[in-house]
Image (cartoon, helix red, strand yellow):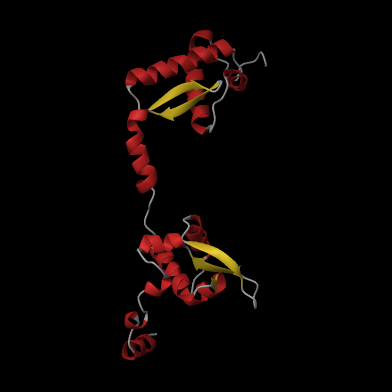
Length: 195
């Protein structure tokens, strides 16, 4: 470890600089971090880091924060307090279910009715690029790759069982018919004439 501190400040003020630095580091870790590694990163003594960590943990406890700083498995890490577990669980299970954009819904509808279908076919039907929307739908688990098109070699997509679950359907045969939703020939003639 270097003798030169990462935060060269007077002795009495160093604790004020160590604590925010520790908080910043601990916010991004996904496993407990040892005092030695933290001290090495900050360029200060292990004892100073230990005192700062214990002080932070006590401060969070006294303030009744929704999180706590725990020493586990030979290192330190932030955890949510157990009494707030129901809120965290609700957020994870329900709160992340953001609505799909209009573009995503339109793309999903094309895939649902035309599957298996390539990205270029969906783009041709919608008249816009669907690359970002396809990534979103893949990430959310509503569509999946299902092989390649024999003519173009492009990936084909289809809906997943999660898609059926979200819509409350047992199979794709339960999707509503498209014909009643399409405009009549008179309305189509009006659209063509207007353009």
